Image (tube, rainbow, N blue to C red):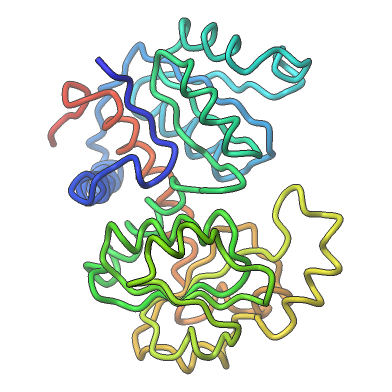
Amino acid sequence: MTTRHFLSLQDVSEIELKQLVARAIQLKDARRKGAEQAPLRGKVMAMIFEKSSTRTRVSFEAGMAQLGGSSIFLSPDDTQLGRGEPIEDSARIISSMVDVIMVRTFGHERLERFADYSSVPVINALTDSFHPCQLLADIQTYTEHRGSMEGIKVAWVGDGNNMCNSYINASALMDFQLSVACPVGYEPDQALLLENADRVTVTHDPSVAIENADLVVTDTWASMGQEEEKQQRIRSFSGFQVNETAMENAAKDALFMHCLPAYRGLEISDTMLESRWSVVWDEAENRLHAQKALLEFLFGPSSAVTE
């Protein structure tokens, strides 16, 4: 049987994505009612971090524990991967000892090579190209607050980065229109834009993207690995801040999201996270519930439990 991986949203169908979101909402409700069960008892997850993390590590580690399993944190300093062992060798060995592997790394091709040689499911916990687990949480959050994303307008304001690429993938699966506002030279993946030209547009004017948007999303201007570019990026992204004035041009009941960490005074105003549009704290918490649903999904129907 072919091993099922989750390297991008393109690894699930529209129906599967909607089922994942629905299950995440169920698991969130069950936790709040104290009705949790442990379908992954005895299962072990390896968590490979080549990039630092707060939300990803806490949500995956806590989620696996809440499902009855356990997890092992592996950093480059702790493993032979950090000393130059081939990815293929590490994948073969680690996957022979655990039941699922979560990888947070830089180049997406590293993740793909790891998955090619893993005998157990591999989850993309962030690469330079995609951040699909965050999109699970974002879709869950919008669904909880507003319902279906079908037919809505989403505005992405900022860098055409891994989050933006994942929003492009989500637009196809959830059937919404995506307007990307970024400075010249910071556009998202061109192949993805061509594949989704019927639903994704790019502008260099944030006001155009935000106008009548049902959801406005942004991210830090300088991601991990881009620290040396920070000052140049601050200059390039001048005028792309999401603030209360900008949000007044969105739809009347628009929501605002940010995957965090956020830098107040740069990509957002000092008070944007606490504004009436913000659902950022729900969004952050939902990483836990969405990833629990994903873990159940990857282990197959036998792992899911009913309330």
